[in-house]
Image (cartoon, rainbow, N blue to C red; front, side, top):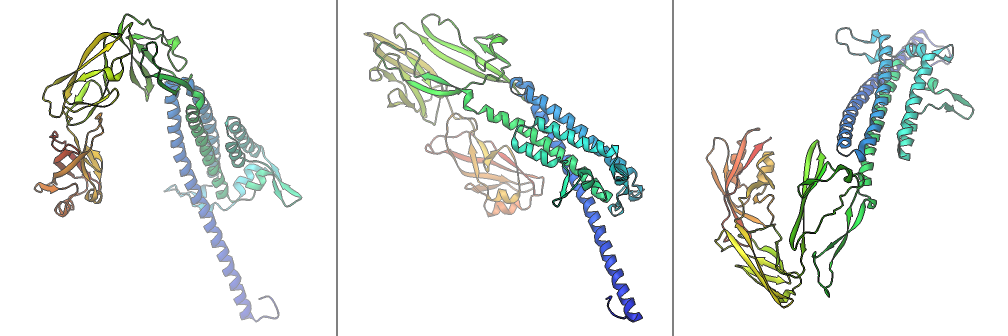
Length: 519
């Protein structure tokens, strides 16, 4: 366009091209400024989200420090120091941002308060604050010092090499190398001559990086303790013998296993035999027993260990049974599922007489069948009494030994109706209910038994009850379900359940299940 002699018309055309190109460049730069501003807003939002997450993590550490000070007190103290320093750093960055914006009033809409990022295209505000005659001002030196102080503080608190590397990168203030010969001070390379919107973006990014690093340290404190908790160094060998009394010539049988013992574990209290164990004996992660054996007979050591979890006491009761016997004079009978037997199920029983061979022990009781040495199954489905006696007899050291024990007989408790395995009040979309299985279960029942369902009643608001055969909604039920609005509830009741493997046993009435439709 610049070669040769040009006509007036051609010169005008060339001038218009130059103006057009300049307008395109100007428009592109405005879009870049807006992009910086919007990105800065997104980063500020991300920092707020991390701040809330950090508050939750700090709350967890505070609660853990209260419940288990041996494990978490030092970690919580460290987290508090990090929070204080991070909050101070964030306040400084936000205050600096406010100072810059106070000098850029032309970019702020007086009515809405919204910022026009395209008007933050000059560098003079930040240049005048950080630089003077080619040198860094005291304010600029202060800014760099704040970044470096915060970086060194974080490095002193970081435990892992990976985290330290991240901190170095996020808060690096080294001079910037240009080619092989020229170096430029960090502050000038990153802030001199840049539009104000770019500087605001960088300040917001420093806040976000600070919150992210704070989050990583908190997470490391929690996960590090969990990793330490499962370490094998917190376990000790535990020997559990098959019985607590033996005679000459018998083989000692039992198990050797690892039991977790943590010296930092704190008990709120331990009660044995109705008496509290002194506090000075609760510091090793376990309590040593030192009790008199007592007279001849069967003895129980009963107690409970009390922890504090989520601000509430949690009690873990325990019972240890042992026998003090010069010569066997009674049988030891224990029900594997407490001192209760249930109709409709096969109750496992362990029956023996200490010191007497199994083939010399005679056991009698209604519905009792021996399956292997010392192990029996008791079926009281057809038994109508409220209690049943198990009688045991044998001979030890030439003398007869006999004993008996009474067990309560109970029916299987009433099942709970379920949909998709959930009971009570269930929330789900209509489309999920259409394909879900209706069932029945016995929550917290000691036996693993299976229940089947033959049919059930289905009720939606304003419509007659529909009887459905099988375990899923049929076409009519699905049609009724489609009329239900969001927030309304449907009921599944009169569930006809049966005991798998023993269909002749009559199950108690099954509790209904209510489904709230969410969409």
